[in-house]
Amino acid sequence: MTDKKIRVLIAKPGLDGHDRGAKVIARALRDAGMEVVYTGIRQTPEMIVEAALQEDVDVVGLSILSGAHMALFPRIMDLMRQHGLDDVLVVAGGIIPDEDVPALQAMGVKGVFGPGTSTDTIVRFIREHLS
Image 1: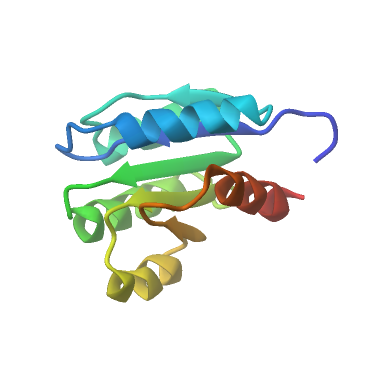
Image 2: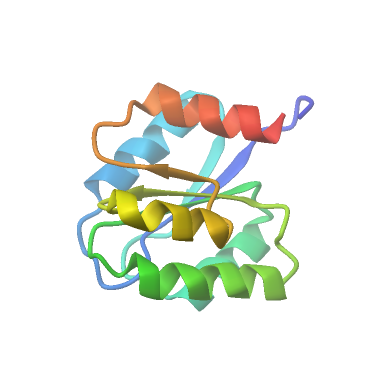
């Protein structure tokens, strides 16, 4: 990417009400020079994809702790494809069991980051995948 700032949407899909981790990531990405839009908690897949369209983002970061990722992420990825957002990098974080990671990657989630992942690792991952 040239001098254009990376635009990132951070979203909390489903009924998960805990968003401290999402806010930490949003701040770290902002501190790294990215433009960050945080949608808040309890977002539907439709709300997330609509926000990604409206904000013309380069990255969608999904934060989930509820265990509903295998129900919500396929719908989000399907809606993104339907709306022509195939070029948007999708990453996920939160409580996601290791055994679910291959299925998420197969549906198009490029990075999955669990608790304890350094913010530098996430920033580097995004920059490398968008360069």
